Image (cartoon, rainbow, N blue to C red):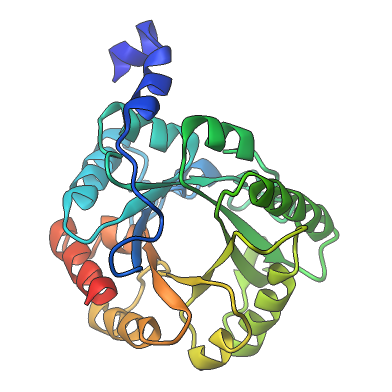
Length: 284
């Protein structure tokens, strides 16, 4: 990879062009996506190690292992991650989801001004990336939210024009000292869903990516958009996490799971086992 990136930058485009693609919705209609867009926001911590995701080779080994397991449909990443995986041939037959807004850096004073600094619609269409993803944190006490909402609406409109599925991950958020904290009450998630669903000139290609919270049935009653579940950071007991996922995956309108650090950096470091359990929950 180092040699290709140094001497033949065009190898990245060639790798995308040669990639074997698949439909977004296929087979049982369910999706299990492994997420790896955290580093571009400066969020490198996982499993109690604040620099767990800093070693790119270790991260890629974990991603390639996850993508090799039955039932894993694809990966969500920033351009650098997807480019590496394309060069490795790891995206063949998998869904590639491009992460768009990573400018609201973790811990920054400008975190709520979440600029679009990753993929854009034109680059994803050119590379034949299969879907887009963006984060929509709504802080009613921070004026920077207005810019994020406007940019999100523009991205949704552009994706719809290109017929590119786009996943919105909405939260009602607030400042807690120097940290941004997401409100995970059912009422807050329902409100964030209502706001995000109305962004852009068309919702035809919009999906939602939502956290698993108490009263999840109320959350799903708030939308007709296809929904994937957000796996979260995995701070609790694995058995409890899997049970919550299993329950939420049974709800109408839920079509799968998007999980990153919980499975890539499990407590026992057994990536294969963690991924296989989650794949079974999605495709059972």
